[in-house]
Image (cartoon, rainbow, N blue to C red; front, side, top):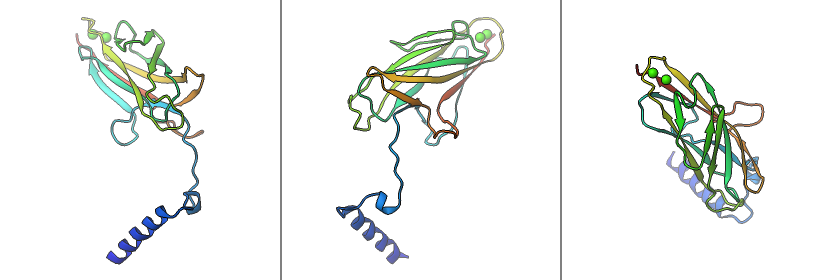
Length: 180
Ligand SMILES: [Ca+2]
Ligand SMILES: [Ca+2]
C-alpha cells in the first residue's frame, strides 16, 4: 500500500514537472469558467440559502460574489418575491444600492480590474426586517438574482450551474417571524 502511494506521488510530481504536461493530455476536458455572479456559498457545500429571522432581528447580509474577475464594477439586478412587502416587512440597507417594491440593484466593486485573472469581489445586500408592532403573521422574502453587467458591457451569468441543469445560488430565502 505504501509503495503504491509513494509511486503515485512520484508520478504525480513527474507529471507536473514535465514541460509538455497538460490537463488535456491526461484526458480532462477543460471548459473556461464563464464569468458569473451568485450568492456566496458560505456552508462549504452548495445548498439553498435559507435564513430565519424575526421582525426585530438586526440587519442580515446576503453576500453576492463574483469570483471570476471583472475589468470594471458590476451592477447586479435582483428581484423580490414572496409574502414580505418592501417598506412594511423589511428594508434594504446596502450603501450605494437602490431598492423598491419589486427589487433593486447593488454594485460589486471590481478589485484587480483584469479579466485574465481570477479575482474575488463581493457586495453585501443588507436585509433589515421591520418591527411593525401589529400581529401580521410570518412572512417570506425570496431574493433572486436577475442579471449582472459590468461598466464595460460584459454580461455575467447569474447563479451557478450548467445550461439545462439546476441553477444553484441564484436565490436566497429569508423567513421573517412575526412579533406582535
Ligand atoms: Ca411584518
Ligand atoms: Ca408583526
